Image 1 (spheres, rainbow, N blue to C red):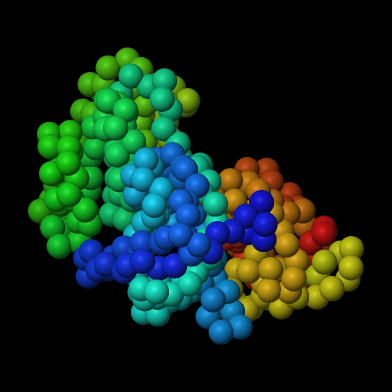
Image 2 (image 1 turned 90 degrees about the horizontal axis):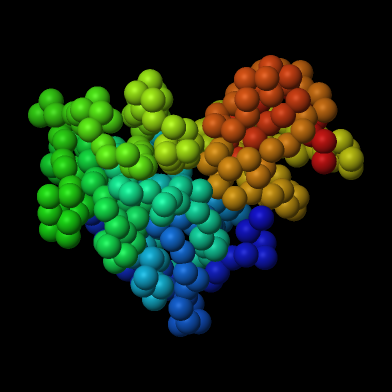
Length: 321
Ligand code: FES
């Protein structure tokens, strides 16, 4: 699904500072009608038009899924990134028109679970705001463990405690507090599903511990979006047409293809869904794989790349398209 036939025109209804690093953005449909329904864990892709250039970044929806008058997302400022979060923080204001994709859920709740054990780190809290709202509305059984650096950076920590009381547990890194993972994994009732969203290291830590403790794979859920990284510019050639496209230092391969009028498929733009998988015909350099999709075999074959997050360090990359 490219964004071409599946986008929604919205107005920025509000921009709210949450912490020194995080702002919340409220979107309403430009024509005043309701937005599409979604389920907790869904994300949208926000198109940021910056002069000639467009950036498309995925963000988790955090508003209650039952209320489709508006969507809300939270954006953490990343001063070292490619500029998407800085654009949102510095340029987007109430009244602006923007384009978003329809919601897609790659981190959905498994409603067969008898209990939902949720572990969040930092800005990874956002999908859980929607998921806890969904479960609370449906009488679901959940427990949320939220780790953040300190109180000032714990976005929505107080709101979550106000809403859900003793079902929410907080851990401040600066105070030496940590999620008691081994104990949590060892003491859950049969039928519990585990959900984790946060920094890559935290996700790996949680999943490795859960697997080692014998949790079945189908009970483990995680959201592991990568942001495209800046890097050296390179050229790609499209084998069918012979067209050459330049990929700039600050744009992803996917964005460069789109800017050139090619319409590759995508869903997550974060290296997890597999939609943008592209065959490579030849490459005279090094692949910089940043996705969570390709297998080690795929990578070793040098025959596949995920244009949404991965780059290439070399003279020419020839794609089968
Ligand atoms: S769009 Fe999902 S992996 Fe690239």
